[in-house]
Image (cartoon, rainbow, N blue to C red; front, side, top):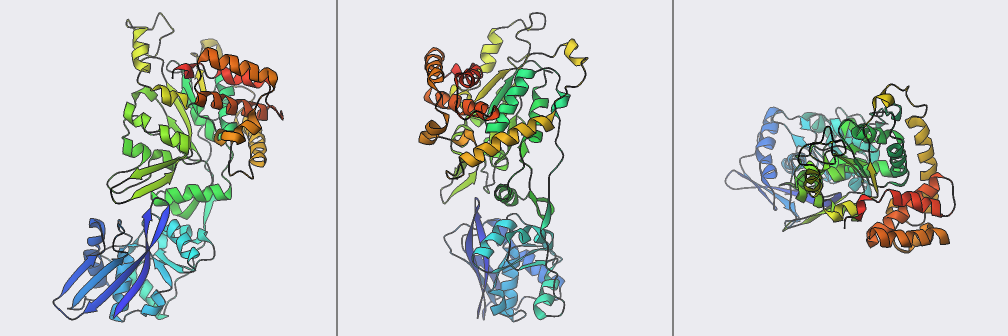
Length: 502
């Protein structure tokens, strides 16, 4: 007899159907797992053996063969433990094998038969819903799986409870979706004194989803203003929350089954490797740029990152996705992020202050800034020089306008963009491209003339030219203007000064 149990293999945000086939036949006692399984999957033999022993069951003294079909699809992860164990129980006649055929099963087993959480339960639940099957998963992730909708979810604390459920003695309760919470903002713009130009640029970046680079001396408030950005961004829509939560689920970072409603804010240290930033590793995982999908990726001390690591961001910033290539598979993760970066003008940080600058100035600034490639800088829409905060600014009372007031204007501008791009599959001005960008952002005659002159004088690339158009469209939206005028183009150009390096 062959017992069959459905489970999944994860390739990026795609859940591929996998059938666990368990056969118990006469022969020498052996327990084999085949089907292109990695070490974590082959080790499931010992976890399954220990879990069955913990509930008083012993493996039959026969040949046990477990096939993970399709055999040419790589299988990674510990979530195959529970489907293998249930398939074995079905083959032994402990659980009705036909009943198991109605469920997709994921979960890791402990030696004490407890069912431990595993990454990707939300994706597995959505996959089960599409196939009109139920889902069996760890009890801790029942609230996460319940977000999939009409799918029947059985959330098991341990293997014995699962057997009791199928035997009809003690049915397990149906889990409810976890509450989606929005954390409090990290910082408020009322904490930022002075820096009106930088705060204006931050508002524009938030309104249009644009990339932004702050450059200035230490202590000028660059990191503080970046931390204020989540507080002025609109919350995720339900569809966006599901997208972001799916990435977090695959990474194992979806806490207590709660969907993520606030836009992610990721701030990796400058020692991060390429795999940590863009994804990859021995077992392919999403990197920081994917974990920040539809949110903010903040890179502080930008030139301190390895140059190769920074340049690996060029493609994700342009396409909104990351593809990790392997010999046997290509894994794609979404990466539609808003890059916010901060840097000092030189290693000592005091290039413009003769009293504090080091003896190597200005050569030290040239060497320091040379770590950033021109193509990467060209992908940043807004370049802002942040001046040092004076003592006179620090003694001033907090500004009257904080994050709440700026967030209201940002929400109005985002609502305009939502209506404008509803039929085009685009969310913000930063994503508009091609003829669509020409249709919505072409300036009036005076604006076109100014842009043409500036593009020639600043030697803007085609990418830089179009990014100026996107920023000008956002500035017009913040001002409530239906069309882009010369004043909007002029302000957008003022933020491209550093982008002349191509």
